[in-house]
Image 1: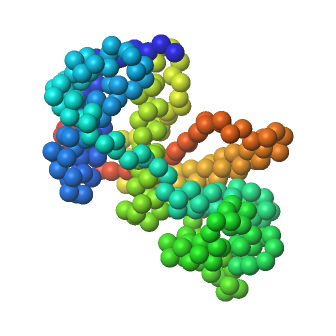
Image 2: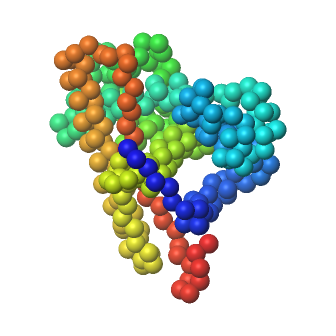
Length: 282
């Protein structure tokens, strides 16, 4: 697919707005500008080199310097530094998300209305023990239950059954799982939007939003509440569809070790007060 690039004059004001909430988070977390500056310098060099063949002349320090504005001495220094650790999915995210996805999306764990069933702790299907065993045999179901209880993902009802508290797995604020999804989801949204900007012709990725400004408070509250309900229902419906498609695929043919395609569909709702009429947005 051919690509085009927007002009810096068009992109920089958008970039300023895009980075504002991230800069606020960095300041609150104690990440100072010199730390971010060093990270950006490294990323500029890494990204400039990505996709270039090893023998490509564009990989020379001089060419990379021209493309990025990073001094050649800094590029040579960066080449000598050890590679940054890879961004990997925490084990707790992989295991927990698969268990919750199965509970929400597979018929064995849902009632006639499609609602995740309260599950006895132990026993044959349907039970919490059987649910965990259907996803992993590396961790004891009791350990998973204790983890879910401590996180508030599940609760025990009056019959000592395990009840899913949330319609989807919501990681504890500021913990490893939430930071993982913070990076994964924002990366994918920015990557999709950036690919759409530089694409020639039809945008390759879906990126749509419903947005209104200067709504009355009661209208905004009502819209947000309904959006949360409908968005959650859509995510659960699509999760069930994905699991059904995957199960049918694996039943019809051997699993291909080389399959690497991934899909990420996200929905968010954001609200804030507009500035008073006549004042510029922050």
